[in-house]
Image (cartoon, rainbow, N blue to C red; front, side, top):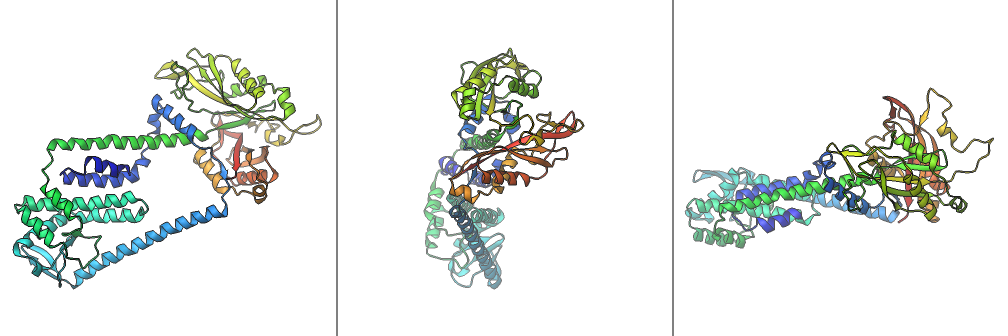
Length: 538
């Protein structure tokens, strides 16, 4: 749509027909290729772009498991079937048209007219060409008309215009549901005729007599299919005559074609912003603390809301003294679950952001996503007593960076001194030679990364029927161990919604393929990992 509008606005009325042909073919190629151009590494160092990424990410909906009802699935199958059916019909039409030209060639007599090899039609019909083939009914035209026709058609043949026709036709078959593909195909055909008409006029033939000749052929029909060949007489005759009488565009007008470059750059940039935003939206690293609070650390692009210059992504991100593991221990030691919140059974996640200043101090602590006033205040209190961080660096200089820490408060099931806590096997470090880590230098990774993990869960989950009937919704968190060989084990629901949804979450997690194991000091180790799965009915 954008390419077609750009063409009509800037190129439609000029007479640079060869340049227009190139631009139209580039349109088709770029429409398929621009989403594949990866600039994500380059974007990391550009602060204005990272701000755009954040704004886009905050507008994206949360990735959830949606109940695919029978009606939705039927519509999906219907639309897919309709697409393929129409595509098959268009392919059949294409083959029939191609076959009609081949049959016409087989039954037509080959001859040489004015030093040009042609196929003579056995009854009156409009002249046309297809690749190296020129078809004409010789008796219907005078000698001068034959010369004009042959120059016109030989231009199509010598410049291989049929390639443009076939290419645009095949793209229309593939993208038939897009009206702008058909509009661009029409512009390709029109421009090829302008090219051939221009060659006739520059060869010295009188423009008025040539135009009268075209008008005289307007009533003739062709014997072959009308979509695949280059037709001497086509329906847009008025446009052709107007273009022939149009004053030639000055050469300086070619400079406007350079406007196409910023358009392409914008498309590529927007495509990469969307890709990075979707990845940023879904990244999370959940772990469990020792004092009944579940803490998740995630690096997000956070919007700059303060008047001072605060970056969101830098070359070297700020770091808590001792690293993430020490940060986890600090929060675990200092978080105190408010008694009133425990009595009410309030639990969930509080997202807090803060600025790590150039001197490493913490300021501007904000609750981005609140849960309960008591828990919000406790999260802010703990972050406020943190020691100075190692500041972030950008271009070799220290910089103020906004950082986000989501803290999940969760109450544990009651236990006694003689019983083993639920799921304790997951955190069993009784074997000192094979301990289970919570945070390691290189965390385990699903094959293909977090985006592939989300896709796997979305494809695999089947919403339980009883949960549908009872309208059960919510987030189930499943903890498990990624062993040193990448296989998963010791599955446990750390956040429950209902028995059926819990069971479905466990089933899906057990089906996961082998992961890339976590590593500590260069060696693969066992690591605890938690995957949240959100169930939501539409």
